[in-house]
Length: 180
Image 1 (tube, rainbow, N blue to C red):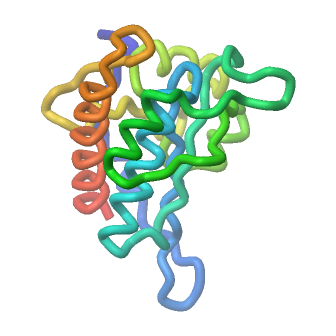
Image 2: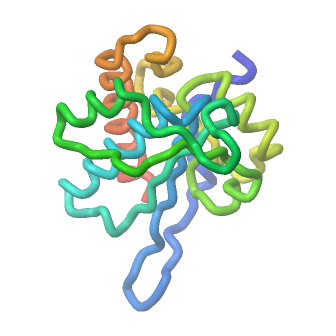
Image 3: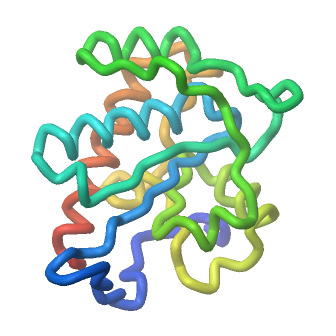
């Protein structure tokens, strides 16, 4: 499909050095429609995964929405109770996280902008413009099961969303380790 992306090697980007012997931090922004279900789940699961692997200092991880539906004035809604519950089942807190909207400036700020579905890809393109640096991806395109992440807002099935996101995150970490 024209708007769906499959994995591409982002121009074999060399790892940039920050200082003597220090590698550049990989900056990742997860994106979904409202930033209350899928993208915060991906944000906090990846933070937990890299912490457990002892590589958290190599990453900056955040999430944002393509819409303002979950943002009132300047204050975003907290993470959906179903996502909070699913994360808590795995000992992960997302306390304090509130919905924020992605901005055009985020394109320059992050190395990877990872969407949960094809509609997020289209909406992000409207916000950020052309993906000239090939930074925008769909999470499950890092797997053999290239499709959208199940949206629990419509399905109510946070277990399926969790499984999809974990599969995508494992694929993304494998991709990063192969393309360093």
